[in-house]
Image (cartoon, rainbow over all chains, first blue to last red; front, side):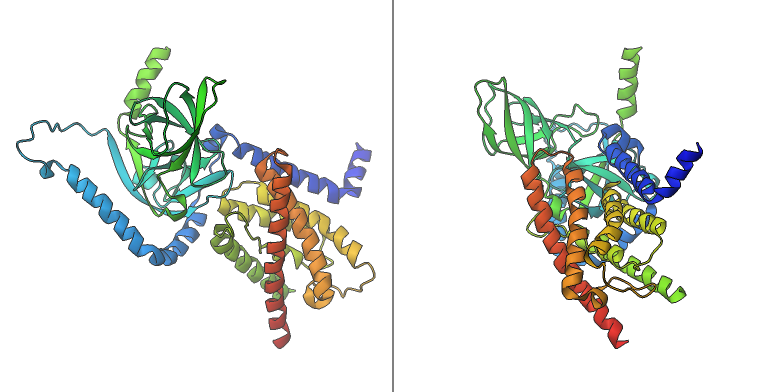
Length: 270
Length: 172
């Protein structure tokens, strides 16, 4: 025992170095698991506060394009209002609310790491919870994995743990979207049955099977696909509809029926 | 002593803010990210207590991780940097006389001396960082190329910053 203490004292520099490195590696390893990154939550109001102060300044440089995007989106929303339909249009059915959208603002975002995150200026005070969906004006953007009082952190589509269930819009076929290309514009389409035709330009939308995103939100467009007759499943490259590099305004989606859906699943398990 | 602590704190805050607000968001040619905050670790005084050196390295890296959401990566890399620092200083400048509490800056080591010193340590930092980020040796040469380009770019920025800093010191 005494010898051990002597040894540690003699090589204290190396021992402390190894301890600190072990600590760092444990942290890195933790961040590589989806479930642990849900539990291990690094959002806090301090870093969020600094980022949003800075974003307040830099946002001015992008006001014009942001306005144009908002205007376009407003037009789309107005077009879908009941008031904008003809009264003779009896086909319009008003449904009970399934999803609620909370507008948010991006305070920090990364695109060049193997796991990228988006920090948003809405937190538990605004009703944000883990595993809510995040969309931009143009398409799907990510999934909330951490919430503090005023801020929340989303794992973006550009994360090696993200796996989004999608559908090819024209024929309804289910596919999976992942990201491992290293390029923030493109993702991978997986599990496409080989008999399904996949052409550049085809739209991929959300399948609505995940309880996170509503059905039919645009994820992106097919860029190219690979033909391989030996394999049962085709692969493809998708160009994301969301431009992560210029992302500023997002909407967080709350699924109001999620509890009911999960309870139903639980009942089935019992 | 106190003024030294104030000076180091200001340097720490300025470099960390510069890092997380500007350079962590800037990716030259799409994939080169500069790490000017390493200058803080390079400029710690020559005869610093080794335990403090390791702890300062670790927590500086952790601060950057905190902002970038890259938990542990910068901490691991900058701990390795400060661990190698005494050996690198000893290797290049064995014969040089240091006054107590002197900083191994450009005014002490000279342009080429500081260049060698900075390049070696930044390379060590980047090497661990990028392999940790890739989490594999799968694309060994692609990663190594990234490390080299990134090191050169970061060292150029650090040299510019250090020349600006040390010039100011003389005029004061």
